[in-house]
Length: 88
Image (cartoon, rainbow, N blue to C red; front, side):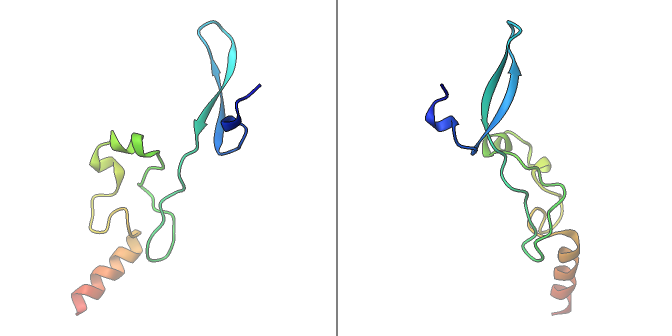
């Protein structure tokens, strides 16, 4: 019987093939939700959807786009923000 912590759907069920040839069910934590723009709420492209321990080992350049407000605002909101700042 499965232990109590594996009965909820907060854990993802993944089928794995063992070296002995048996297929067993492994339980993995689910990925976090996609990063969204702080301005308009659009899903941010170029920002990976990974668990913290995986993000920790990733290089900084792979975590978010290399531009001002990268990983916080989408390109269109960034453009608006920069134009707005220049006009002040």
